[in-house]
Image (tube, rainbow, N blue to C red):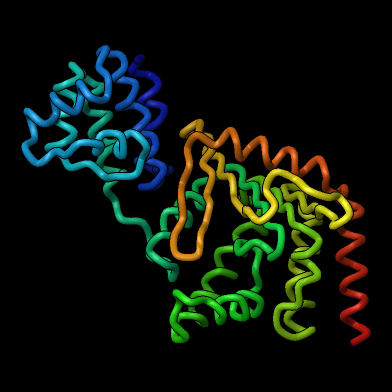
Length: 295
């Protein structure tokens, strides 16, 4: 691999990629070095076990997928096993240091922290949610009503997490925000969460987002029928520097980060093909807001 590519990735001081993105970048570069050395995962694991007695089977796969940090000793063993030399070693070490850096704290569950870091680094964010408005565009009041029903978040955490959720979502309204697609099912807009005031505030937030030049808001009407992701909300995050799209899929007690996201990208496109256009989607929001004003 040419040195120039690594210089492009890590030769920066004022615009570091962030630890989660750095792990993804590092994993991709290490995989390319391994393949360039003609080593299978199994062969590389054996070489690493010789150099690092505490190395365990399947660890390399996690490192290459950006799921694990690496120590200085592990990086030294990896570049030695792959025959990496010269300036490329220094650049890999620098990227590994960035990957070990702690991200800024956020009031979210542990399994959600990687998503927070990824969303800060993402150049494009595509959200799909069928029966509830996506968390990234919640108002604190709407979020509080949703979080209050959680079986994994304590009552004491509800308020702070709700406030933090709106604060993080505010970044989508800024001039330097990523390109954003919000795709929701009509049922998400019809589901009453909290009082009329709470719903009004949430729908107004969506309405404001829908007018931004870098944002797209569209609704999949109930009349559109079935589609590939009924009951399966997900978010796609594209990180230009890593040339990678990661699918974030949340469950009741955890989440998966899927780098091989082609299936989710195709599903998003299929759902989008059934959605109302942006003007019709805004018109639906306006009708629902009008109905709430009459209550």
